[in-house]
Length: 406
Image (cartoon, rainbow, N blue to C red; front, side, top):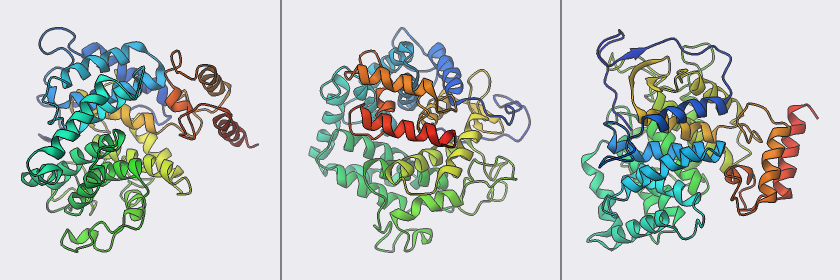
């Protein structure tokens, strides 16, 4: 997550601007390749900084996680090699001190390993959460250690830790989830730099690790007034309420504050920032997967179009989707994560259609249950039961018929 620094809506210094792509959205798969090709090319490959992107060592995790997703969707071994090189850099940190997005990168690398249940990435995560829990004060002390951080930044990093802790079935995973709720309850426009982004990333983590149920976000009532009597199940609707409506500039993206203002000129735009849209979209996508009955298709479709139109032909992603602002590699990594979650139902190759080519991807995976020659197996496992089989084919066929009005 990169802080926003604005010098005015003109071309000065490192700020860049160009016209967004045409309204007709580029297929997500093409956009994924553009971003990932640029990131693979710009990564430092040798020396003491091997694995990072220039001047963005602190954001290696977010970029590596995106490169894993790009590999899963495309099967391009170069993207996985890039992510593994970044993972090697991440492992040089003390194993009890991974940043949240670094932990997410290790989750992705573990999932794509030859043996997802036993590999260096998973072992590092297991060690991390065991060390934290056994240190003086344990996980509770670690979570309280974010006390000097503004709430939305704390939510960002804790959300990623929640997903990683659940992935390795950490003994205190529920404590991490509750810690996320405790910090989310502090987020509001007055105290936080990125309120809507925090809501989005929290929704993603919560929906990825359990149901969005009737749990009160602030049961004690000591948090920000915004969360009074709000429940975890309210989060998807709240996010949709912060999406910029059709007919407005940057439609489909998201406002950055709960009150939908630019805070008296604090930033040039009331909405449309890349990270807000990325994490709000991830939150909605995760909610739709956890609870298929939620009516989120329209919001997800609009978010996907806004994100794709915010990517330059070069694969660069700037801090605002119009497009304006500083270009950081981490925005590209985060964008890859979002686009990987925003493929339409059954669109296994991210070409905007459900057709024979998607059936071919699934068929390849059915013939190769070990996923040795079929990297998109995690995508083809539509029902999420750990197998690519006729149940997944049945779901894909239904979506194919639906697309053709069958």
